[in-house]
Length: 198
Image (cartoon, rainbow, N blue to C red; front, top):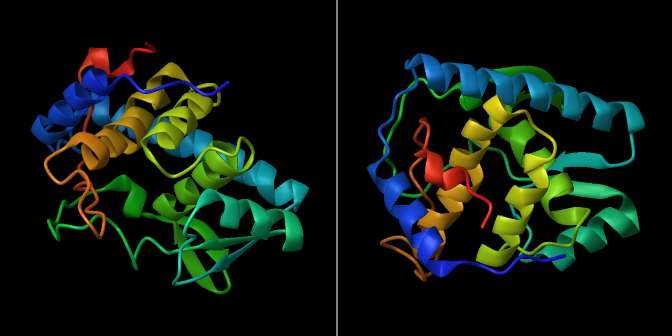
């Protein structure tokens, strides 16, 4: 089932993301991101154990979800744009981002950051399996699919990284810009209303 967007809700989430402070040292934020990372580690290990998809670095991300699904079905492949090649758009630096720490995993001799791991999980479990697109509707549905995989604590960080950023991109001050302007990669916890399933 594909959920439709509540535009006014996502505008409010976008505003909340815009106003959210970068607080990587705040205990609640640290705990949420630590939970997200630990649970991503478990999920990524399951992918490695099953060995059902090959992951490879690529400088050209997919244009649409159909291209990504075809790649995964036809040649069992997933192209990954590294976080170092593309992470936000505005050039604002936010230090102490735990997702930019090395994960201990490697891909073709290069270390994977936790944000790289998140991109792999997001592409597989948020898009490929369900066929959800990269537009606002697809990203909201990918977020909802992820919520069933993570604990309540980890979902606090997950919401910032998915619903928060997607709402800002699609309903924020640069919505509709070409090329797409991506959200600042702030670390924080959004207000409680942002976790609602409408």
